[in-house]
Length: 219
Image 1 (cartoon, rainbow, N blue to C red):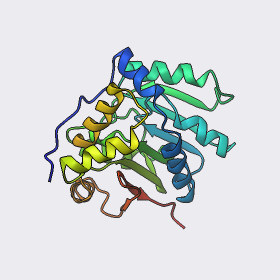
Image 2 (image 1 turned 60 degrees about the vertical axis):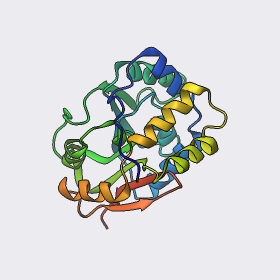
Image 3 (image 1 turned 120 degrees about the horizontal axis):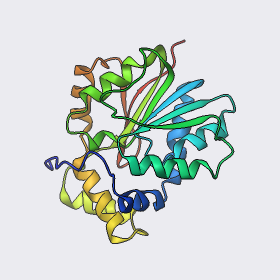
């Protein structure tokens, strides 16, 4: 099994934000949004680690009643998200704030859905993040935390990079490889979730590289 090698917690240079923003995550993001609605998400939603803000407009396109707050630790990602928001018709329904996922400045139970896409592997110890996500979630509401999972061997990691980053430049391919190396295994995530008050959340293997920790809407 590959050893976990940490990445920087925040991608906060203009070059990093621009490189990530330019990558095509359309297919993976669309699958994420579909899962979110399958779980019953609606109402006021929190996007933890929103990055350049690709996901909130997609959600608003699908649900005309949804409102979303996106937070990120990286100032450059928030700037990119705000720029991208101006190209959508959802400026009154989406807001972005600079914030640490481990110390959310929101009240208990403030959100009808909380979701996060591929930030788990950036956090050395994700327990505070997961506990905060649960804290700000209304009881019985939807939680969806999706991330990469670490492959078992270098050979498999290289194969995933060749398959899924074939059209990317060397910097983007390197970012993807580093993210796979920094990710948790499903077994590690199960133990972390149990220790973070999320023993009732299910872990689902979504693709050859993605897994989700999820809670559906009650009832």
